[in-house]
Amino acid sequence: KQEVTQIPAALSVPEGENLVLNCSFTDSAIYNLQWFRQDPGKGLTSLLLIQSSQREQTSGRLNASLDKSSGRSTLYIAASQPGDSATYLCAVKHSNYQLIWGAGTKLIIKP
Amino acid sequence: DTAVSQTPKYLVTQMGNDKSIKCEQNLGHDTMYWYKQDSKKFLKIMFSYNNKELIINETVPNRFSPKSPDKAHLNLHINSLELGDSAVYFCASSQEGLAVTDTQYFGPGTRLTVL
Picture 1 (spheres, rainbow over the protein chains, first blue to last red):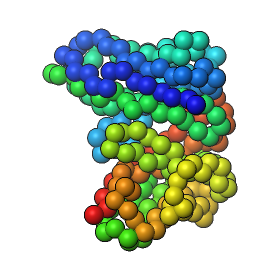
Picture 2: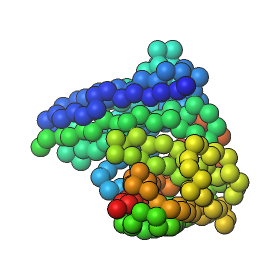
Picture 3: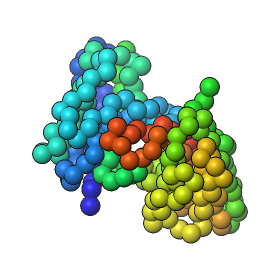
């Protein structure tokens, strides 16, 4: 059974720092891995999608990596800003139509 | 122009009542989903519809009944509400659900509180 774990559950850093969020999954047979952002009272927004054949994806200050063999992904945020404060969720597409989700990392960027 | 919309945003009701949550997407997607996010923030898939056909039906009490009148709408009806149904319910859609590049677009959520 696929399980997704995110560490840490919460993280607070000063503005301007680079930071890494971690995601691990138990079954390497995945179609893709996705990182989402959830703001309070709002829905989720897709940030990056890494296909199983890819190693990383980049969008602006965000870089996500995927190591399928070890069952790990990281989300790197460069030069963090207060606007980056949100909960970041990792999800793996384990089968058609279905994503398996981690519980998220709540990120607070202090001005 | 909202891509995935849900109504209502907040729903407070008594135990035993029946309620519905509506979802609409204007992205032209073929697949729609209902998720439940509990107090620990875990997102769990409840149902998935592709072209109005039920694809995924996880272990959800049969008090929950999804209805898809057309590709753009997936409504969730809940009978005999219980305290444990209190959660945030998210609707989402995606192009098809199969492709490795398929990603999901989420509505803003409906916070259901059962008293």
